[in-house]
Image (cartoon, rainbow, N blue to C red; front, side, top):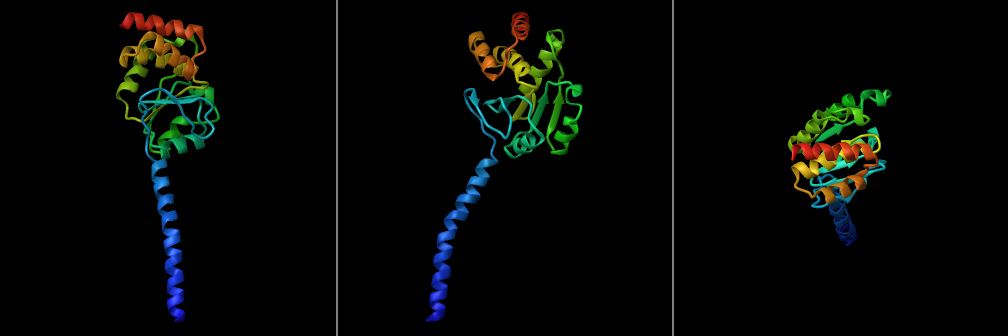
Length: 189
């Protein structure tokens, strides 16, 4: 009789714990799936201050090393950095990203004089062809917004009005960057 009570208790305990184990495992698997949204949406990942997502592209301000680790767990495959290495003298982003097993591209520019047709073309090509999910970032997402504006109009058939609104939502603040993007769009339509 005593052995029956112990087996009954163990069985009841197992039945109580089993659903919790299933929930934990399921939740953990869901956290590691890359998301894809059909419209631009805000997103959260660690300490990144500005972050939005759209169709497998994450548009961000500067992530920390822990944020990159979390992004990898979330499914990010490619990182595109718009910052000059000299802007991050204490952090070798390329080595860190490649050490995580992610693909890394650096298309550095800072200031309207460095925002060239070649720069727009390289970033647009990466946004079209690189393995998604992609994390595109700069320091504040201002540069990201300029790139997003050109990409959305020329490669994703967004209206200029929609693309400008999205670029500003993402982080575009510089009127010079917006003007350069609009001139580029006009030349490449």
